[in-house]
Length: 435
Image 1 (cartoon, helix red, strand yellow):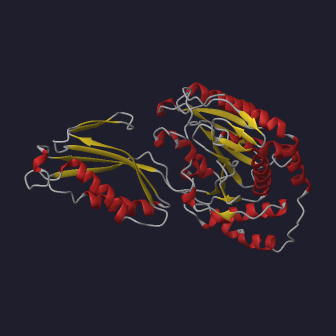
Image 2: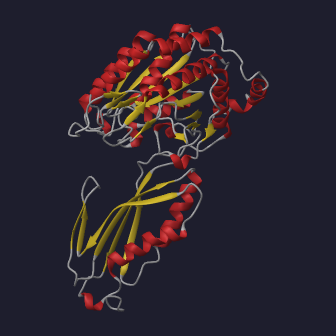
Image 3: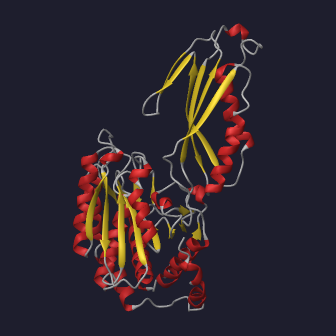
């Protein structure tokens, strides 16, 4: 991992010694003025994006939003490419590159084109209500892309974009990724070229205070399949009949809850079914089960997720889960599978914390409160985690929103301007630093 920020702490100590009301530079004042002057334009742009459905499986819709982003990025001097992802069963990604002078830090900006709302969702249109904007993806992540474009336009107007080396990577399947060895291959490659990764998913607030995200937990799926001797229920728990598949599944799941406890580690069971027969569908979201009250269950299936803060924690948890599964009740056998297409963790490294410190220097110069470090349990997984092993980064540069992933998703419009100003100044300062 590139850890250049560790060396930057000396510079940070000098920044900390500066007056609390340290003035922004002329160019930085110009950036904040541009963000404010273009508020009407930015909201009109966001409304257009929101009103175009781009549910992950609406490939045409995702591609159309990609073209809308191309229309914003190309005039800023970016070379924009569409990466077709039909081989992964998804639409595709936008990759846009801005060539600077080659001397400054290389920045990787990450967002996503898709939303959770497919064309059959009843939630399809933007509605403005004062400082709130309601609509599909208004916060996650069309609002994040609006912050990104507003910040880049401000940099262009102030002259700080000219020499900046920036790659924008907008995935088309963040909400439901295809096979990661294909769908995240290009993102991982871009992360290895970058010096800093900046994630434009939503800003998290606690008690009204903006927080900085230096870490994101993993998200991985598991499937438990239990088989057991079936027979008349009068024989349940006897040496000849055993306990049945449902009791064994319950034992395993409850043992996970009781015995595997670590800070930042969680399990969820999202689907379970069992009976005389049980079959998981191809999409792994439904179980067809049959049974009677007087028949010992012969099959049980459960599916869930595992979220952890590091690869080491994942390995420990998986080993302990397998150890529990390996001690079945009488008459039952169980198999636990971990699925490979999960999101890795973004651990809270010192390099990431140093970027947050740089962001807090921006906050100070803008007259904004310092942002504390968010507990990663407070947010989900994201695409920045795929590059976290190779480059320092920070998440949560998008706007604040509420009700994400459900009808009524609402973005806090004022936070768009606050985040765009932060991002424009942070990116300008980082891009001007020597590699």
